[in-house]
Image (tube, rainbow, N blue to C red; front, side):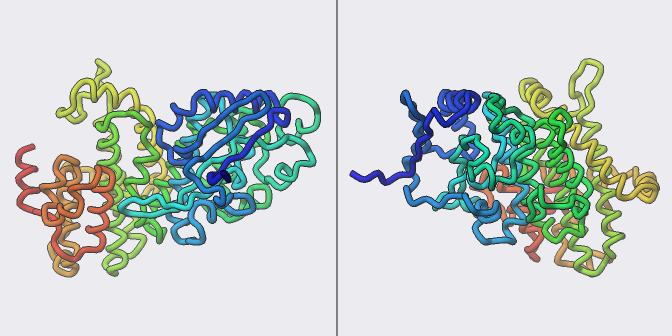
Length: 468
């Protein structure tokens, strides 16, 4: 009977010792890696080993599957839907970084990672907010390391230290910094549509992005960031472009679901995720609100940007104050409803990185606004808790379709708390009640942005505020 599913064979005599070691590690730990549900490793993938080869089988993927070879990453990830590619590229990049971090823990590295290493699923990955084509990492850097190998010659993501050793007879040891180089190449292409070795980096206007790519391509591997540092810096680019900058047209497409799915680590309890999710929903809402004010011609962009930056700056300062450890190294200002185990888990899994990201958000806002922002914040420092923003009544009359947003703005520190969502957004709760926590926030933000009807229950909101 003819084989109907996709498979390929890697002959051991074509591989270096490093590559063989990686394949053995992948085979041994494949079940553990699959359990992490990255989505990039096919659940149907099986690795078999005999004396001469490794055989990769994808038993639920047709033998006629489309391969990534000869394609660009926009086609691999999204087909030809270029607009979707621009909006969701951040999440796909961080998914790749997360996978690389996990694989590196098993001494599996992805130097030279390129489109040729992916296979394209015929099905789609669907959520409440977006649909993307499925793709899988099918080839785990098993390229034959010879100078005349066309796969190596055509691959523009090969770090110099590998090029220098190919053909010398020396064993090439793959490492984390080689993976960082290849990921830097992917980041460069997905943001510029140009390969890293073909572009003048001075053409990249975004300073954060340009500096990150420069570090990834550093000729000295020791000076490149670690994978964890790469993820951290790229998250800041995502936050800066998609939340903080009101001038980015695609900013409104920032997805809480997508962000949280790439921010969190597997197997963690929900408490820490909710804390992060609630906060980023707040600042995303603020950014969307002032973006709508620009479109409504009530504020000029410069004025709206300053108002948005000021309010987000104050919210970040508030959040950092809650995350401050007391003399007993406890989070005494944090949510008192959480158990000690939940608080300890948050401290262990989130506190350091989350605090660092918040501090860097403050730095980004300071650099954008300098002295003007400092004066504005000094004047507005009294804004805190539920009185953090007061908008004049006449503005609500001019812009009645934003009434729900004005109510949310006045109750900013209560209305987006997860346990309050059903009460606060009672008029539309049927639209999100059956959805998971992540999707609820995206649905609510989308409704606030597009629904001209009242979608909040002001009485419930006021009652919640009185109870707390």
